[in-house]
Structures are given as C-alpha cells and as structure tokens.
Length: 467
Image (cartoon, rainbow, N blue to C red; front, side, top):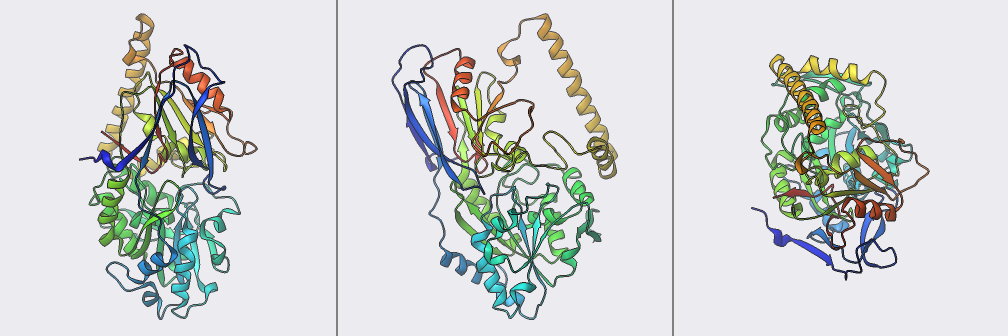
C-alpha cells in the first residue's frame, strides 16, 4: 500500500484575474533543478494567477558524507572489504555506468581507488570501463565528469557493444555471453552504478550493470527472450534478473557499489558487497521513498526529467513516464536541458536511426526470439495497425468522443545550451526554450480557463507514479 504521507506538496494558489492568460500577473514561482552534468542549476517556473500548482517532492534522508560512504565500503554485505578482495591482485577493473545515468560516481571513485591502492596496487594499474551498453559514445570530456579527476591516472575505456567483445560461454538459460575483452584481462572486477526504475527489469543497478559491457547479441537475447516487468516493479527474482546475476558471476563482478540519489543528485543511500544479498533491501527502500501517488483530477502534468535530462532520447525514455498515462484532455509538459543533444540508443533510437537500423533490428529479433513469440509479435503488431486504421475511419465518419481524441502533444521546455542542436522535428513533442510560449499553448489547450490544477513531478526520472 502506498503511503502518501511520505510526500510533501508545495501548493501555490493565486487569485483569479479574468478569463485569459495574463502575462503581467505571474504571482507563483517554483524552483526545480535542471542540467545534469552541466552545472545542475536551478530553473524557476512562473505560473499565472488562478493556477493551483502542486509539486510532489519525495521526502528523502540527508545526503551521505564522505566518511559515511567510506565506512560502507569497509563493511560490504556478504563479503570482505574492497581492500581485502584486491590483496594479491594486480589488474583490477571497475565498471561504471555511463552518462545516460545520473550517478555521481565522482563521489565514490576516490574512496574506491584508495581502497584498491591500499592493497598495494598502483593507481595506473586500475582500469575503469564505462558501461555504455547499446548507447552512443559520450563526448570526450564526459569520462572525467563521471569519475572525477582522481581517476585520471587510471586506464579509461569506453565500451562498444559492436567491437572488442569476446564470447566466454553460455548461461544456463541458453544466452550466449559476449563481453568486453578488457574484462578478460583483469583479475578482480568491481561495479559502480546507480539504482533507478526501468521497465525491462523493474530496476537497474546491482548485477544489471553488467548489461552495459556485453555484446549486442547478448543484449538482444536478454531484452527479447524474457518478459519485461513494469516500471519500478519490486520483483527481484525474475528470469531476467537471475541471468544478469549469472553473467555477473561469469565475468567475476561479484562485488558492486550501488547508490540511490535524491532530487538534487546527491547520494542518500549506498550499498556495497554482493548485490544478490543487498538488492532486495535497496529496492524496498527506493520504492517506499520514491513511489508517488498519481492525481487524476488535474488539467496539467509537468514532468521534470532531471536528473536524467542531458540527452533528449533518454529524457523521453526515462523521464516522460508521468506523461504517458494522462487523460486525453490533460496538457503535458516536460522539462529537460538536452545539453548533450539527442543521444543514441541503438535498439530504440528516438529519431534519425543509424543506417539500415530497421533491417538489422528485425534480423536480430528473429535470431533470438522463439518462434511462438515471433508469431505473437506479428499478430500483436497487425492487430494494432488494423485497430488504428479502423479508429481513423470511424473518426472521419463520426464526431470523435473525448476518449477517442488523440493525446495533447508534449511541450518540452528546453533549459540548456541552445547551440547544441536537436532534430528539427520529434514526433509528438514540441520543443521550445520559451516558457511563456508553453503557458500560452496550455492555456489554449484548456480553452483559456483560469483555474487550472497543475501537478509537478520535480524529479520524474526517479519517481514511480502509482495509484
């Protein structure tokens, strides 16, 4: 059962001043964060008089201190300390999640490096591998933003799922395991990443970090041979998760550091040790802290995609969740800096897919999916296409009812560097850097009504809408 008491609402009520949107009476302002990896700066949003604005802040504990994090590293769950694990080793490798995850690894990495060096290993013998999975390569300055300057003497590598991978075996479920070759040259592997909700596995973090250093074939097997579970599902005993645990063991990544961050991108919880032991507890804490009761009786829903707002592709995939199930009359607003531009997901590109992507995608699906699942997929796609055509025909023959009207478009308020180009058109999304333009558009969508109810998800990427 959800505990709505764990949420605070910041409600701003303004006096009505007439039937139109008046730009001169912006009497309510809320402050949010924007621009992960690019300053993490505040952004102030002003609202017209008459709009009732509720901000659904999760109630989170204070950030951990460096001393507290160091203490957690010294007492890992279910195994010896990092220093003890590294004694007698000479080729340690750290896997870290990439720039599409807001994990402030730069706060953890100095502590972890010192723990490794305390085992007698020189810092330049440490390899740090950025786990990009099927994501595009980050910009050249991104690595040190992620891991911090203390990691600069280490050997820094970025994973490529299409090259530099080697098959090391097969899981008990029949998945061929292709892994980054650098891992094969190491003698101790430690993972560092964040815990965040997602749909294939319910949550990322723990052993799921291994997905970021696998070959494209293995990643397709894992994504499309298993049934996905819903966003933020707390079931940690799925076939998908068990396969990830098995692959992590195959590559020697049996020790991980997983963090949970707050709406300011500060670390509020940290777990270290055997992820199979600590992950259920971590997910329980996350779910209790970030589950957010949905409000159906609203006119406007605002989804601030921070702290995962650097790339448009991933802001949409991970930060638009509160906008996906809105009623058709609701106006939908997203906020993202997009300071790194569009971004790329090689399985689900948002726009401008790589050359021959569709053909390659279909061939890979056919190579990994069981026959019965392929037939089911074809039937589902055909049924959906037929239904869409039928609805279009009926809408022409008859006036559309409210429940058949299309959803309002998403208005994306881009707060970041406008010199970083985005595609001129993104289906279903209207991009603007002018907040006033969005207010005008919403007012029009809402027939210029004065008293609008607004719900704001201040850190939508972290939050789990429920109810």
